[in-house]
Image (tube, rainbow, N blue to C red):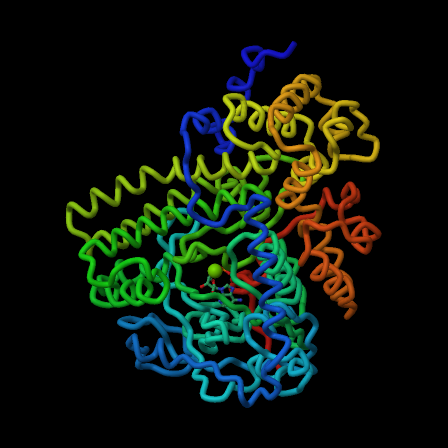
Length: 598
Ligand code: AMP
Ligand code: MG
């Protein structure tokens, strides 16, 4: 018989595994209410429902003519001072939030290679037919301005890899404007890869095909996994030569430029506030905060003397929830700098991200991150660091009492994160109610997964796909991840405790399995899958991009085309040697002589 006391759990868990280390405390806290979206089966329901209702509503009256599609930066330009200088000359910008900047058209021929129908119809109210026009192609590649749109680039700073990096800003992105859709939601449309801006420093303002494909697929996949994120409307590939030293090894290659049209309710980041605080532009700091609060945090009263504190408290809470959701799907962002952390706590700036395959808290998706600062298991701690930086940015406009209160708020971050992750992992295991053994069941499973290098996504998925009876019989020949996991010497003990725990629940097996299948995806964007699509895309075959986009839009449903492609199978051998570098868009080009582009 298995006894909790016999499991050498605490001794062997490494300190970096935030997820596991704090599991022990989780269950001491009773009746916590998760405030953000829950990734449990019941919470998945609203997501699919909202997608459905959006689609039903949009069947009629979609915009057919792009001349009627109005996006505008008027509100932002009315709210904030704009950089007095125009043009894209690289400079230090002061006393403003935005600079005007015109995208630089990409060298043609251009090709629209991916479109998200869900975004085009559901968020932008556009008929899909409009995306087939030359005008659309020009709009979304920066070659032509949308009617009445004055593109802007945003001035922000940030802490990169732990250190203040000064002014950063939109070095290769242009904000086309805001669009308020028929549901009344306002989205900000941004081109990424659209050329140099005042913030390009020594970069070329471009993004290459591989990184743009990863952003398009990655952000859409995260949305359908139920994780708050920016969205991607479409992707255009050009013949613009772009130089990249992909692995920083002196091997410079010419790649092709691409532009993604991406959307967020707001693109403001922690770094948006930091730059104002660092340069002591405190009136502007207040102005930006007031705007963000008014537009995006309607529950905070604008005349509340503690409104900045209330705002901070919300960001702390929502960031903790976001990172817990990342962890629940094994997502590693890769570059968790403060300039990549949204004030709305959505996932933004997809670069060298990765979905963890074999369970490994030290998994680092970015080959340039030598020290593993942004390993998957460090993300919760890095979130705390970033929130400290946010507090530092706010300090000059907080009273001494409010600063102390904000510090207390920040101290609560770990609890919020731990409680949330506890709920998410319980949902992944189909556990209902509270049981004293839950923390052991979760932590012990993760430890066995680490020991056996079992696949994170598929272990949970396969546990969902087996009945208690099948699990009891240990017949895992059709389940490669469980087969790996079951090689662990303590697996039978864990299974017995897990099955007893399930047995104590009133719900029957089918309900448990359906619930678990609703939170444990069968398909995530594994690096090898993205890489396979990228390889074909480099030969102008975008069929796998389309396939992945379709499949990852329903990641919880078994799809025959995905099965045929092996997306739920054991990853191919070559996947183990795959490296994803940060140079996708990066400043890698900065040390290289610039070539003339014709
Ligand atoms: P990221 O790592 O993509 O979040 O970018 C960090 C900063 O570098 C941001 O200010 C970007 O706008 C800028 N940046 C990244 N790549 C380029 C590029 N190719 N050209 C100009 N700026 C860039
Ligand atoms: Mg960024």
